[in-house]
Length: 508
Image 1 (cartoon, rainbow, N blue to C red):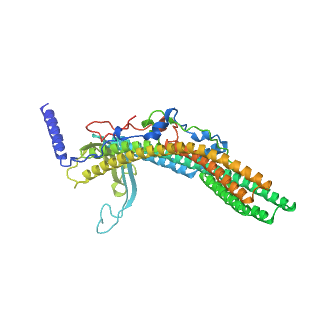
Image 2: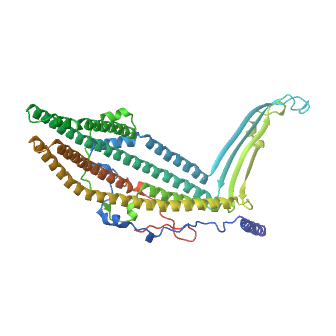
Image 3: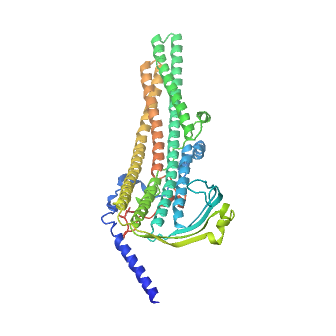
């Protein structure tokens, strides 16, 4: 009984000495230095506040609000066939595999080693003549080892959690790549639609110019016109035809771009029909601002996961300062058999040749030249970097949203003025054309009226395209909608306690 008490006292003394020695490698002075993102520093601005109303969050298939079946098919094909989606999926699988490998350290490890070798012993001055000289024997070994890291301070657990958080980052980055592809495809499709609209304007103007030329020829034949009128009527035709050729080139290039975005060869663009985009969408924001406004953006969620992973990395780096115990058990057989020694191939499995060992193994950092402090300092700096990048992402997201809302509001106001200018230009073109046919004015007035009408029609088409583009950019800035609860989930920000890193806050 007394011996057992003495043994316990010696064990307690030993652990106490280990704890004191561990103080030689200390974490004093190493901690994150970045302040939290205070709620009162986030001013969403007048544009966001003015747009806020009781609206639902954007649907994950936000482009369907444009009501173009061809666009819906293109996006679906792009999400399936574009190589960037395959790359993003492969990165998710890679991160998941790395997380599983890191998590394996939490489980007991069982390992079997065996070696079976036929060996010939030479007959020379090193070995013989003697018992083994010129003999052939089996030199066989086998060992089965079991080890388990007690992970007293949670180093392995934190490393495994960090790897899992990094897998979450990869998954959210895949969603960000998907959103980027959706946005690029929709905006390229809007440009494709604009080229068709601009071409239609030119074709209509060309037809009108041809009618006026025909009328000038008819006037000359009737003896009331002049050759100058015919020359003036012919002048704009080549330039209009050239501009139509330019737009045909742009349409061909847009087809190639759309084909590349859907992950197909250029020939896939040849079958694309004219877009039929609706302009009746409503660009509204959810009522909860600003937290819900940006909380579903993939880049914001990914940055939250990075901060979570960094906090686990700091915990693992800090745990490396403390002693750890690894339990191990080993059993095996070793034998040299055959030849003059006797015994057979399996003699190493006999009970006389078996051996075993069992016990704890202690690892304790004492003096490491500052390696552990450097590792903890690097982990703390990584945390600070991601905290600052989180702030940057949040502020950048608010700017992107505000910019698109400002643009949409300005375009709505411009639309009113463009419609007034277009109505005036159409009236002037009609009056100039009628006056020319009646001989009341010359052709210069017709040319001026046509040029002004063409400019106003193109302004209207470009304005509509810009509004569609701003809508697509706003949907991307909002995060493209929520796929499901899992994809929208982000880790909670670190708790505000003495042992946690600096806390981040974002006001609702």
